[in-house]
Amino acid sequence: NKTNKTFECDDNENEEAE
Image 1 (cartoon, rainbow, N blue to C red):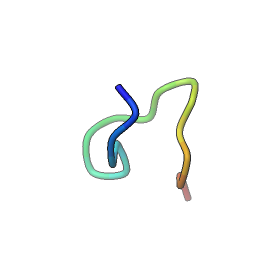
Image 2 (image 1 turned 90 degrees about the horizontal axis):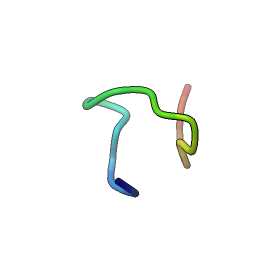
Image 3 (image 1 turned 60 degrees about the vertical axis):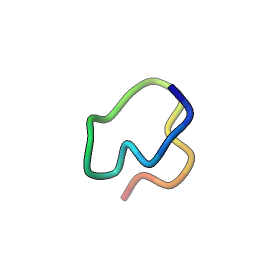
Image 4 (image 1 turned 135 degrees about the vertical axis):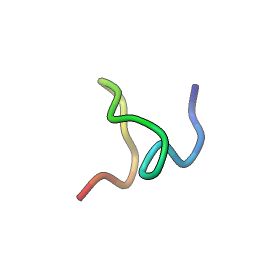
């Protein structure tokens, strides 16, 4: 899952996580 998980869930490979 390489999507906007910023509003989904924090995975191990989050591209733009705050």
